[in-house]
Length: 115
Image (cartoon, rainbow, N blue to C red; front, side, top):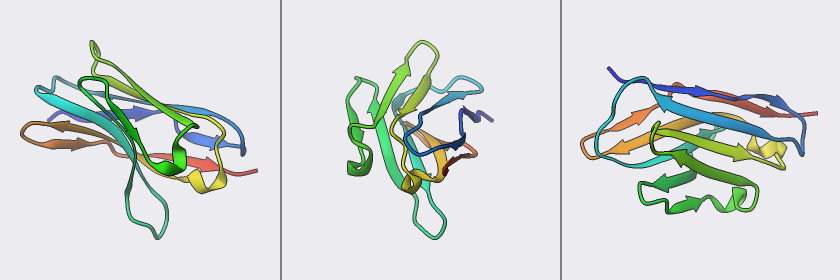
């Protein structure tokens, strides 16, 4: 069973930066997009950023200009660079890999933005 391994979460002050990374523990074929979602307490899970196999990206309006998603195709690894973090970015961040026959989810990594 392939799992997504996430890293990079933690506690940061407002205005700070974090970089999340996510890689599968094994091979996944027919990937067409990789991305990050987040879920804050009492709220629904929402898309943060996504990147397609061709490199097309899309972002939630709330993170545009602050977050950048990119991927290493050779390693099937996706990264989320988060700058100018705000307290409202506090959430559990989940990695997602969408492949032709199924979607994969990471276990989640906590990001807390607080002074």
